[in-house]
Image (cartoon, rainbow, N blue to C red; front, side, top):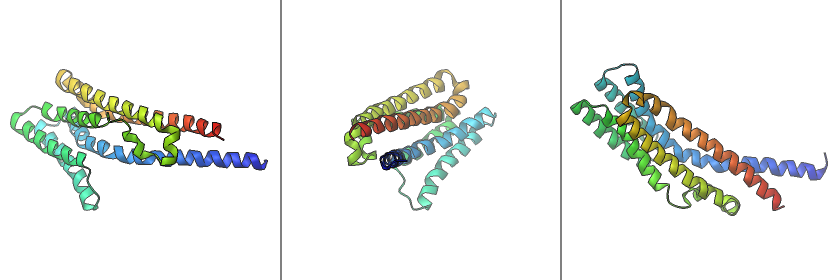
Length: 206
């Protein structure tokens, strides 16, 4: 292997590792949103298993509270989104227990996704997840995917509301599959796109 080829392989390996590290903060930013869904997913599973409404609501609310409590016990900063979610969990659980209508809990994810989606409409919000050196090279891609993430959140909010109100029987399957699957697919698409285009641009700049 020639020295030039060795240098080329080293640069490409470093670039791949750099792109992987670059997207790790994005994963960390999405974790609170994924954890927020845990209590609702447990609630949906219990409903699908024909557990009574009130026990399913109590268990789902307990899981949601446990997520926030676990973060606090580990002395980690609990994101504002999870505090908002906790308040909504308690309010919706109380409404279900008093009113006997499961849709109070079913609609709750739509509120969270809508809030997150609107916040993600701010141009350039993903720029914080790349280094200044990489921003000039892939900043346009991060801006584009920022709007794509916003669209996905708003779409999820709308679909969840639709299933909760119009297709209630199918809601457990929807909330258990679509939100997580769609995030994983979009994250994979972003990682591959940013990695491939970023690497091509870096080679062109040599």
